[in-house]
Image (cartoon, rainbow, N blue to C red; front, side, top):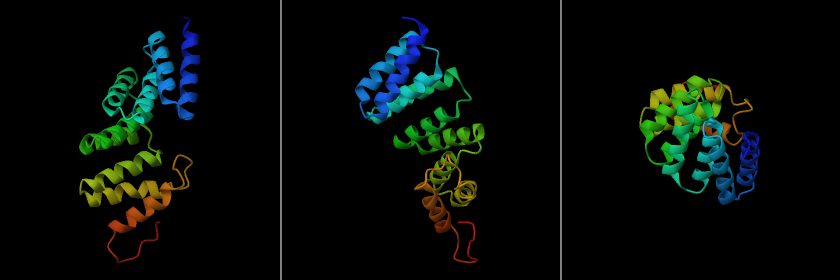
Length: 168
């Protein structure tokens, strides 16, 4: 099969994933990987589908393969962090989110997940500092609308009641 067919298979896999047919999505994306195994995006999207199927350990492997092929892949770092977090590996998730933010500093979702993880780890001062950029970019298109109020309320809950914050 020609390499351009791999792209078509991959795109069909993404469409199946978005349509909720994870088994078909996985089959199509794995076929694309079989044709072009060195495309990081294919592996990262395989990770998304595996995660949707609840196969977190396999999703983790897929993200790691994507990052081995393309170390500066911010979205793969972010999704690696999400998977590590779901596996209860908070410290590792924090490292992945931190790398994602360094690679894509304007990604408010990565900033927010980094701050939330710091909060979970009891590092409240660092979490508060991490919420600041996410709150400041709450109008950013990358920040999902329902997330912005959560960001601001999480930040506010870490602040002492004096003086009142005007940030969020």
